Length: 120
Image 1 (tube, rainbow, N blue to C red):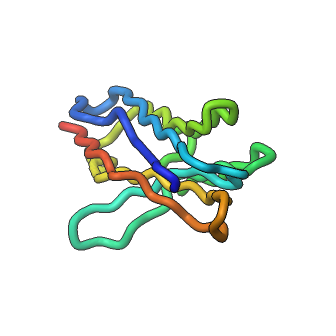
Image 2 (tube, rainbow, N blue to C red):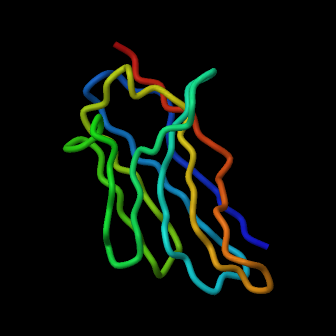
Image 3 (cartoon, helix red, strand yellow):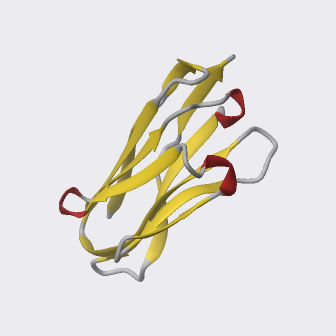
C-alpha cells in the first residue's frame, strides 16, 4: 500500500513565497517521477512541474523562473518552492508520484490536494 501525503500551502500575498511538500510512503520498490499538478474548479488538471529520476525536470511555461521542484530521494519527498506568486497561481495543488510498489504494477499515485491562495 502506498500513501502520498502533502503539506504546506495556504494564503499569501502576491509576490510572496510558499513551499509545498509531499512524502510518499509504504511498500515501495522504486519511484521514477514525482511532481505537481494544479486544478481550479471546473478546469482541467494542469502540470506545474515534474522531476524524473536522473534529475530531469519539466515546468509549465507560466511558472518557469518562479517555481522550483526538488526531491529528497532518501526521504521519498518532493518539494515545490514557489516564489513571486501571482493571483493566477491560486489553485488546488496535487502531488503525484509514479511508484513501483511491492506486489502491484507501477502506477501514478496522488496526494490529497492542498489549496494555495494568492491575494492581490
